[in-house]
Image (cartoon, rainbow, N blue to C red; front, side):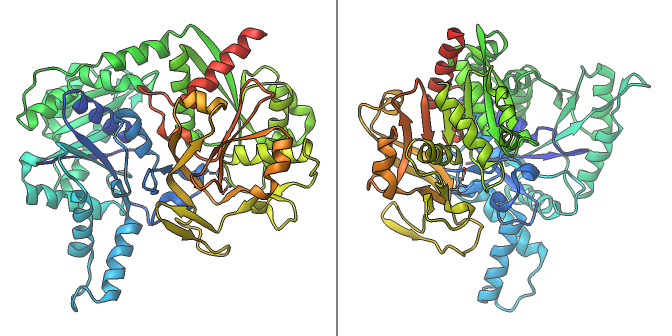
Length: 542
Ligand code: GLN
């Protein structure tokens, strides 16, 4: 019997509901329970796949090919449970399913309404695809009081009636701002936010109060009194120097203990948090440091590279070093005089990206990495541009390009319109829909024995997650190989180059997939571990 924990947020956005849910998930797991985490997003896009990364942050891709909210990345990093398509729904997805049923005539002449049809669809989603999970943590995106989130709040209110209080717990994340002139943390916004929730029939049982300093006992009691909550369920959530300290901190504040009490589950044995404590200690007291340049396009919002930044941190944890990230907008390298920005770095990474703007600057960064023997990691677009760089500068194809930038006779990177997924052929039109039509999700890749990546992974077949439309054009394979490009990972049918490396370089790897999506603090991804190891070696050479 799965119990549900609904996590809402109030006062302002960006309070860390995703992290709170992830941390609670990891605490319940450390107590031996099986968990699943999901997110309901109130916006109207069917999924975040078509949204700009600088507006909405990274699009997190699951094994089963869903394009989801970046909070699902936190869920996976903290719990290790692989997210699925059924773990993220938006208002857009819910409405489009209801509307297509209506068009199909499934409602038998009824007037289709928000209540009950939309709310029923939300409830179906929340309860679907669950097996022997002890807990399903369900985060409601947005802020309480938004018009958009009302159907979700109504649905979870109904669910508590349907399933009973013993199976549903409401947790609310809120803010206690510090007002300098008064010298106090203020509780009023929290009181109002809880009032707002009460007005839609939801009484939270646990409050997670974000604050930048300790909450005085009398303020905690005041919140408890005004919000109708037990004082021990008013939990302090202070800002942390690393997100991986959040589970231990919440445990110290009694969060998992209160959840146990609510559901009348045994409070003993306490969770074993030693692995988390070790990670935090390694992050806080590293033995050295390296600097990695990330040459990208969406550097104005660092959330657009969330998983990447985390995976690099994990690589640092594995090598006991701090990884300093030097975010560089690739467009600056269109002026060759700025290449000195790369002088003091121990590694260069070109991440995933879309479109022509900034691509030339990234190609210059690849060239610097290759020529100066700086460890280079090209992810998705970063691999494609590394292939273009080799084609232009080493294979004698000066106009080598990607068909993503327009038609060309030297499209070393070309649009993929047909490929194999499992035992099916996927087909795309070049002018088809943009949403949900890329090569998405986990695909197998065969590693070539004797290559660096084969040694790094220590296995023959890997499964990594994809999100792209274009591929290395194998018509150019021979000439690229002559230019030193080693095709070290291929799709099982040998048709799609999934990984490349160079023999004449200490560490030069390009991957068509997104390895950052599968890295976890307790299990750093082998490529990030190895890349940072190479960066450490490079830093010791100078
Ligand atoms: N724009 C490239 C493509 O669609 C790369 C995508 C990516 O880096 N995720 O193939």
